[in-house]
Length: 74
Image 1 (spheres, rainbow, N blue to C red):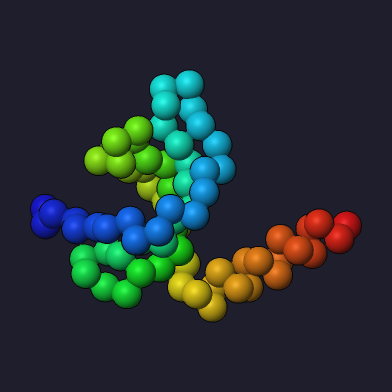
Image 2 (image 1 turned 120 degrees about the vertical axis):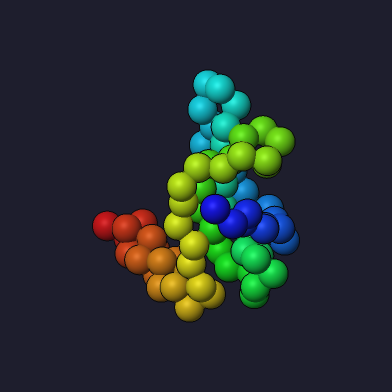
């Protein structure tokens, strides 16, 4: 299996933390030297291991923000 290269370009914030110290985070991540995208996933404390997550383009993130704002209005 090919190694996945990643760089956390900007740490946006922590959503939650597990008892084992892993954190679910929103970050701007560049995968395999590509354009950075918004990324939500769990990370080990040293950011060397990661769980499965979801990656969003800027346009998808804008749509998600609008959907969250609708929840806040209810």
